[in-house]
Length: 172
Image (cartoon, rainbow, N blue to C red; front, top):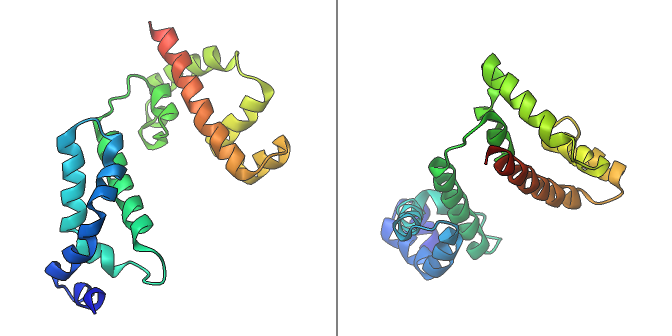
């Protein structure tokens, strides 16, 4: 069996298994504007084929599994390319590990920016913001808003975009 050979380290077998998914991998990488970066994702996934197939559950479809791996690698490249301009933007971009928590000056700037931005949010948006920051779980926010946790995640994404727009307006 081809999958068994791939899991034993046969790179030719692994590439033969993943080769039909080239278009799907490139589609997953389409979030990257640069063609070379998209090709890099394809090459990376194909070069890592043995590791990918080792962790693959053969009782599930392979296409979506490969797509998610490729999309995650494209997002990693995308994150490396972004250069946040302020502490609050780092939070809005969903990168709290890069946030102002360790630097008192950046924390003060973020607090001022947040105060300016939060004044324009609705009660619902404040609840979603609490979910964004981890103060409230998605389930708890969903219960307070009367929606599903998936709805909370959608609103979190929309709120990040809205906060980013407010931030851009304030910096112009």
